[in-house]
Structures are given as C-alpha cells and as structure tokens.
Image (cartoon, rainbow, N blue to C red):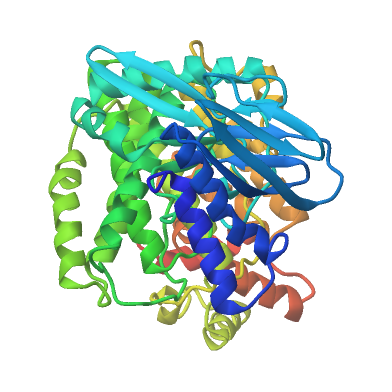
Length: 520
C-alpha cells in the first residue's frame, strides 16, 4: 500500500493542510482518517481478520488500490465500517452492507473495482491500473469519482495494447523499465487535437492522461510522463538547479515562460518523445507523421537544452545531467528526414517562437518611441536599437494564441491523401481561411488572408506570425524577418504610431522597413 501512487499524493496533501493550518476539500478528519482506509486495504490484501472505521465521501467508501463501496448518500461526510472475517470482507454504513467480491478486481452489487489493463508484447508484460475512483488521484486536491463507461474502458484497452506493442518493439530498453515506474493512469475525456497529460512527484508512478486518438499518440504520452516520473524520482536525491522561481525561459511545449525547474522537466520528457518518433521514422511506420514529429521535437528540445546548459543557476549535477542528454540528442539534429518534414518542422518552430515573443516580450518604451520617431521623420532605415535582444519576458500574455496552424499541419502529415479535406478544415477550432491556404501551400492566398486579418486587428499575434511565415515561404523578405524574429517590437511600434498619427502604415509596410536591421 505504501507504493500505491495515491498514498503519496494523500500524504502530501494532508501534510500541507496540517502545516499551513488551512482548510481543504472537506473536513480535516476525512483526510486524516484516510490512513484507516489505507490500513483496511492492506489488511484485505494480507487476508487478515479485522474491523476498522473509515471515511465515507458522499456515500462512497474508498479502499485504495481495491475499489469503492457505494451507499445512498445521507450526508456529505461520514463513517463506514470495514470488516474481514474468514477471508470474506464487508463494508457497512447506514444499515446497509456491501460484500466485496471474492476477486475485488471485479465489480459487484454496491462495489466498483479499480480496473486493471494487462498487455503483453512479445516477452514484455505491462500492467496499468485505470483508476477513476481514488479521491487522491488528482494532481492538486481530492476529486470525486468519475467512472468511465465500459465502451471507453474497451477503447483504453485497445489503445494501451497498441501503445505497449510500439514501445516494446521500437524502444525495447525503455520497455524493460517502464512497467516499474508507470503503474497507474487516471483516465480523462479526449480533447480535440490534444494529448493532455500530467503527473506529480508526489504520486510516483501515476499520470493523468486524456483518451488519445491512436496507439502512437498514447505511446508518446506514456513515454513523456514516464520521463517526468523518472526525473521526479531523481530530484528527490539530487538538485539539478538552485531555487529560481522566475518564469523566464522559452519552451516549445508551453505558451508561457517557464521557470528553470519546469524547463528541465520538459527537456527530459520531450527527449523521450523525440526518441519515440525517431524510432518510428527509422522503422518506416506512419512515416510522414513520424518524420515530422521527430524533426519538430528534436529541434525544439535541442533549442531549450542549449539555453539551459548556459544557465548560471544549474548545479554541477544539472550540467552533467544535460550533458548526458545532449550526447544523445545532439547527433540526432543531423539525421536525414524528408524535405517536407524538415520544412514543416522549421516553420512550426518559427511560428510558435514568434507568437511567444509577441505575447511575452515587452520592448523598452524608449526604444519604441525612438523607432516610431525615425519612421515619422522619413528615415530610410530604423535606428540600430531596433535590433536589441535580451528582453526579459513577462508571464502575463499580451493577446491570445491559436494552435490552429499546428493542428492543420498535423492533420496534413497524418492524412493518407493530402491536402486537407473540407470536413477536416472545418473541424479545426480557430483556423482561418489564411491558415488553410498556408498549410495547403497556397502562399499568395495566405498572404492576402493575413493582410486582411491584420487590417481588422493589427495586434493579433497569430496573424502577425502567419504573415511572416507566408512571406518567407516565397523567399527572403524583410517583413518576414521582422515579423518572425522581432514581432514584439513591430507590434509595439505600430501601436505607438496608431496612437500618434491619424494614418498609421500597414503592419507589413512597417515590418519591411524594420526588417532591414533584422538578421534572417
């Protein structure tokens, strides 16, 4: 029972309530009393005779790692009695008794089991709990049970089988150790075009995972979370960086700046994801998709790793850790992929970074005013300060960001017969006609579309970077350089001009002028 992931999350949550003297979800005695439920579950597994009083949440009594006895709820929080007599076990409350099945892993009258999925790929065996009952399975605080229907459980079984087979065949070294470090999944509903997942160091061995679209997506997610879990265990033993909560580092897997601790976690997690897609690409499986994902993640993970290796708050252990990752990840940057995968990955990388810069970097107001004055005075070139770098980011975003272009790219590389069908186009949230044109390769139409979007809203980050991408796709262009490499300054100067002159220039015209000083 000590190794149950949710024993750790329960202990962490309850300890914080005691230490901070704050209220939580439900009364404190419920959380303290959960220790009785853990003991009762251990006694059942040991086949002991016993009797214990355990907490009951809204009529539900959890026995961790086994299941839940369900009663009519008469009050939010109360107590039930668990008894073991001669190998038979009962939970009683409100003059009702639920008898546990002889196999607690099966459902029965008044009893919901914590279901388990077993998969085998060659000689490798994988066992994963799908825990939709334990109140401490959430990341931050207790959550109510949320039983997934049988048809969804069957989907999970099929996808887990496929994911485990892919990992066992293509990353056999990882397959040997994953069953030790990943033992439980908390299933969540699917999210369109997303593979949401999360884990916490307190619930070692567990991950919250949304229902994916296919086995490859699930395999990448399981590897991602296993890497987090592994690094979380290492961090209990050694510090990789000095404490530094500043949100200051660009990472491709988030739209906001991250502290160094989060960036380190992400590098290790996406190093594993990169290895998975590399293995599939080398095997020729789902080649367009695998090559794109490999090309994208190797580049983005390497970008962040290089920035972290120079960070002064790293410890010696942290530098050795990143050096070890770099020994593997570095040579992958030169491995051959298709021209399509390389170009799409490079564009997607530039797109996300430009959007991040536009939303999270704030140019010096004096620089903005100087550049605006140079424009208004008719100078042929902007002042050299227009190319300044090293701006500190802010975690507060200036504007929203859309993932529609990346979603469309992934639909394209995953399609058997490109280009995108009309139905697929309409299914992508927030995608515009310009986005469709860009991903289809109709760059002239995309340019006109983004120009029209900026005429309506010159501040829209997605349109700024979209115009930069479409212009650069047709060849070197000063406006593209400015929009992709200094979008925050272009936007700030254009805002300044809109507030000081009745006829401000079009964003593209200003960007072309400013792009004279921006390297490609």
